[in-house]
Amino acid sequence: MSELLPPIEQMLVESGGKLRAAIETIDVNAQGICFVVDPSTRALVGVLTDGDVRRALLKGATLESPLVDVMKRKFTSLPADTPTEEIQRRLTPKLHYIPLVDGQNRPVDYACAHRFRRIQVAQPLLTGNELAYVTDCIQTNWISSAGKYVQRFEQMFQEYCGVPHALAVANGTVALHLALDALGIKAGDEVIVPDFTFAASINSVLYTGATPVLVDVLPGNWTMDPEAVKKAITPRTKAIMPVHLYGYPCHMDELRALADRHGLFLVEDCAEALGSRYKDRPVGSFGEANTFSFYGNKTITTGEGGMITFTDAKAYERAAILRDHGMSKQRRYWHDHVGYNYRLTNLQAAVGVAQMERIDFLVAAKRRLGEIYTRELSELKGLVPPPRSPDVVNSYWLFTMLATDECGVARDDLIAKLLLNGIETRPVFFPLHQMPPYQKYAPKGGCPVTDRVSSQGLSLPSAVSLTDAEIESVCSSLKSILGRRNLFS
Image (cartoon, rainbow, N blue to C red):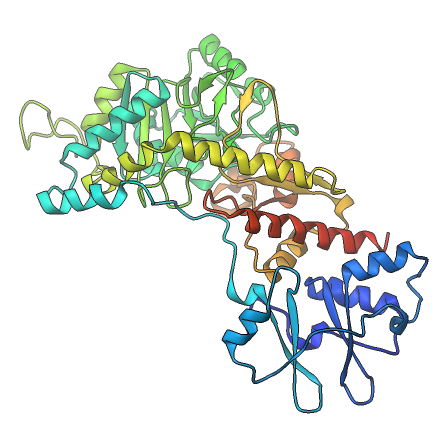
């Protein structure tokens, strides 16, 4: 049996018990069903689903009603040695679980659809021209950082974001580092960073020798709080780094105004927000330098890879030199600066070009998934969906929600129960100020919004390749888990 599934012992309840015992068993195993056995012989005598429970309660049963009055006595079971092919044939959209019994009709195992599939949080969709373009690289021997696909990828990205310059790099983290370096950020400077973000944001500041200044996020959209940024600005501040978290853009008008008023650079971290827009303007076009990531779980991928978009021509020119070991553009092997090898390969760029050819489809598919989740889960008590605003286009990189105390299920418990249903989820990021390398940067008064959101947030499967059946499985599993818990309230 799959290690994800609860053991058969957690699926069993004795027929002499009350309805309450069955509900508790179903809640623990998170499968929406239990198998009823005779207390003396351990033989299978019935089954009970959470749907059966709800229907019984509506007809007047109570939690103290005898279980035998509610359970189904007609059910499907199979011998434990039934071939796998026959088990799979018998599992249908209406028959999700089949108890497997020994010669004395005692349950020794069970079959279910979750045994044969796992819904992942994210996975790439590589069904366009990726293979053809990579094959072209190999057949022409252009596999390193020189080649037509790197420049084509940069041009496509530049046009998509509506910026004058774009520079492809090895990954999203070096994109941040190179952007800051190209803008002249150095030791003695300060860069304002949200406390609620992936570690690459703060790490890139530390790479330059500058000091990160952490600020809290807004409770309404979980992104950088402009008022907190305003209070954090000092004479040493040189840049503000908004992070468009999980696809939702920051308040860019206010942050851009703050940067202009104080003569600061704006560096957008758009790693999770390709395709998002703020007031009909694409993210990655507001700052002097802005960065994207193409890791395998991102909206488009090159396996590893990143991009910097520039509105500052001098920063772009400096970054292009630093990306290639600081080598002079006029004299080969002459180095004017201590640079880096931050280049993207032609092979990776070939995948990126194929992905960009389908960017509108990919973003639309993400948004469709986000709308379905929002609609289907909106009435579940205690679940807070991603923020929404008429001024914002959320690209829903990951559909991320909060599981508040009203759920009756702790966030980590909910994650565990969904995994028992073959559904991967993931918690959101830890507050930066809580982790050892960054504790000394914790702001006075802390970041209470970040603390709360971090403890409650989780992301649902958000791959564009999800089928309608898989989306329905995620939604129905959530409804079932939270619905069972609400029976006790």
